[in-house]
Amino acid sequence: MGALTLPSTDEVWGWLSKVPDPEIPVISLTDLGIVRDVAWEGDTLVVTVTPTYSGCPATTVINLDIEQALRDHGIEKLRLERRLSPPWTTDWISPEGRDKLRAYGIAPPIDGTAADGRLMARVNSLVGGSNLTIPCPRCGSSDTEKISQFGSTPCKASYRCKACLEPFDYFKCI
Image (cartoon, rainbow, N blue to C red; front, side, top):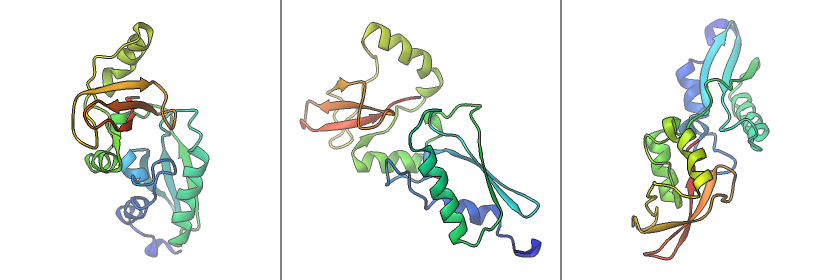
């Protein structure tokens, strides 16, 4: 690709917005907020990614999916960079991503809880409780209960709705 034919970063963001998260395929990597930056350094495209947490088992698959999507669009020179600071937070999930999670049956993180949620999550785990009311993504009831701190993936907890009796995952505030 010559310098004059490089796609715009907006176009690249558009391509990346179609790459699904491997663990929750209804949400894109950009909706999840883990693609932090897209920039050209000369004729090399640099994509900066922040994993949801440093031990996320999907990180390798995510990087491969990003690389494949960009190569499919003709990007030849590509560098993926991992950025751990600042650490990813659930506050970075887009409003559209939250809606997609809810429609899929996963309760999205409670808005505004991630910034102070790190400390509160540790305190709550020590005392065995939580002040948060997690609404059911299926029926909207607030009459829910935590079944387990651990859900289908490490970033989710298991809940049950007492109104509709359906189990659901809650995307934990990280």
